[in-house]
Image 1 (tube, rainbow, N blue to C red):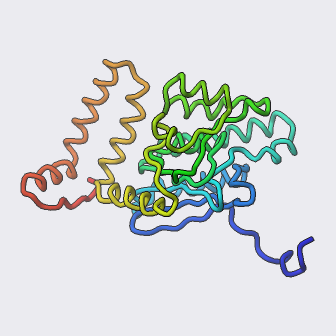
Image 2: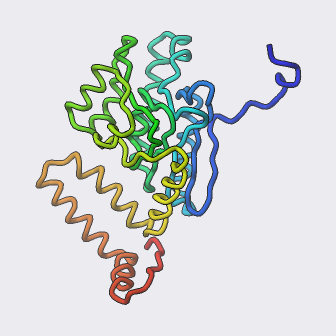
Length: 268
């Protein structure tokens, strides 16, 4: 039983945000539930993504998890407490919107992974543009073990790793160590736990130094072209390159390279 003092303490926010040097760090803050994605937590993430989209002060987003794990997926207790179609549809729609918002966000998103990233948590890692994990991190789409195939995590997973590897994860539901996740292309790097924050910060700082306009153009182009037929992809990429070349930042970047100086970006 909580003490009288504990009962009157304000609830911890479900999501923490900290901005520094052009980087917005969003920390899922349900550590005792391994940051399971409740409806309220997903709404909080969605709200910050919407705000960050038009925030010129943010160049990069880092998504992390509080405590020992990154994210254990959907909140199964919440789902079982609301056993009806309307709630299920609302939950999965909110999750799908959140994942797609990360992809369409005009700023790169980096997953910082400690501990486990399972089911929708693994989906979140796969959805982020980049991912850095500690060497002890583990990944899984284990829904098959409890009679619930990871169909929505499958969407992001199958767009990051090969089909055979994706099906192995989905059909066996086994934990994949960080080193194997690097081999599969699910994450970019695995580093010792005490080097994780430095590795993420280094990656973020390099991105912050680039033209925000160029990054926005490039990120959008990457996700659009990857779904197109080869010829259509090249046609789209040609138009994107032309549009990019006409931007002031491209001219500045090329001139700075020729003149051997640092460019000054204006997102124009």
